[in-house]
Amino acid sequence: MCRNKLLIPDLFKLYNNFVLYHDRNAKYYYDNVLTGSTGHGKASDCVYCGSCEKVCPQQLNIRQLLRKVAETFE
Ligand code: SF4
Image 1: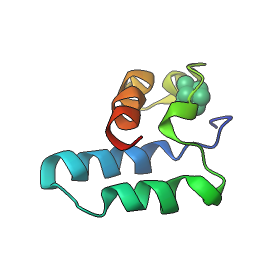
Image 2: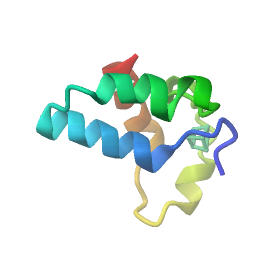
Image 3: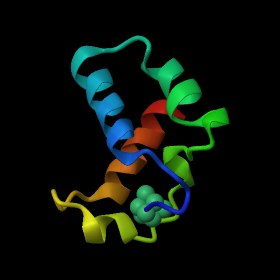
């Protein structure tokens, strides 16, 4: 469990939809549904502890990918 309550799979899904399909609502969705007042952290709130990567079934480089998400939406 991410200490900053990042919705990691949802953030990656949103990022993919934005990059692949140019989803125009992605920024709004990022700010208002996946982060912000919802209590879930932004991609830039990742503290790079690596806990999520230890249990990731796909062995993704989550920390590196979250940097891309932050660069895209913040
Ligand atoms: S590396 Fe980032 S996303 Fe993963 S558990 Fe730690 S704070 Fe959360």
